[in-house]
Amino acid sequence: MSDTAANVLDGAIHPAANTQLFGHSGAQEFLARSYRTGKSHHAILIEGPEGIGKATLAFRFANYVLSNPEPGLAPVTIPDPDPSTPISRQILSGASHNLLHLTRPVDDKTGKVKSAITVDEVRRAGHFFSQTSGTGNRRIVIIDPADDLNRNAANAILKILEEPPRGAMFLVLSHAPGKLLPTIRSRCQTLKLSPLGDSELRQSLTALGQSIDGGQTAESVQRLAKGSVSRALKLKNYGGLDIIAAFDEIVAGEGPSARKAMHRLADVLSGKDSEVIFTFFLEHLSEYLVEQARGAALQGQLAIADKRAKLVSEIVEKITVSTAYNLDKKQTLLSILEAAKAA
Image 1 (cartoon, rainbow, N blue to C red):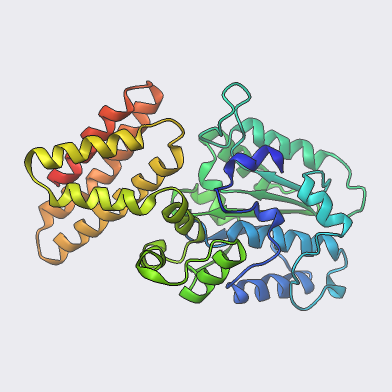
Image 2 (image 1 turned 90 degrees about the vertical axis):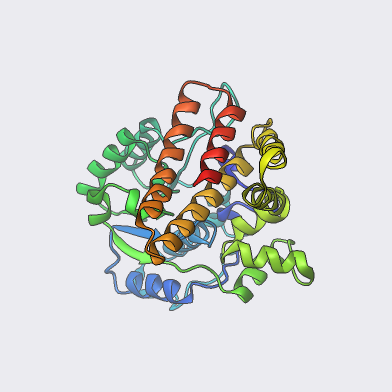
């Protein structure tokens, strides 16, 4: 689990160590029922917005399966994992011979998390399945998330899904399943999760020691989190509320004041160790432009709607080019902010 520690947000805990899951009772019932009947699909696509508990559910189900190798004797419901059991300790330490967690690896040279899950990571799955299970249990691979697979890695996973080894189970997580290869989606059974309700979000945050009850700030966090724990943590612990307020100032401002606000925001987003909040801002900007495009379309302003919709993909392309060629991050952000304001 230490290899993926860099993927865990401040205030959160690794999904493998999370013994509580709020919400998604229907999904848990479905997984337990399908496993108990011996009819579990070899690949389950668990999809839904980021930060609503998909990875926690996957580790929770994996623990349940590995703790109950005889499906017919498994509990009717998935219980909270017991950290003291040998299986839980192996999963927590990353030493389980029956569970492999594929996620973006840490670059040994920079110490930072890589931008994608590479084919080298997928080769670990091939090696994993080539080893003999010491217990005869299922062999489970959690892909977290499959959205991060680069093209070669996605094709390599597809080959394994097409001819899965005996006893193999894939738990494929996705925030944006529409971006996955259609052939990967077609080989998985889909399990859709919805954003958390207000009470479930509060319970999840309280369990993490990140209560948001009471006050105007708490109301803003809950409203803007949109049922996502990770989004709430970014709003609360990474300055997300300030980032959104700064962007709103830019949109509403005119002339030199708006330009100064752009520079201030670009300075923050291009600063050292700003990857989390930078990604958060890009997600917020995309949502803003989509909403603006939808509003224009409803008013019959189709040309404006089309322009705003296309800007979302243009921004993604600008960021990709900027990263690939190591261009000045602040200047890239300024051009994006100017384009968003003009739209």
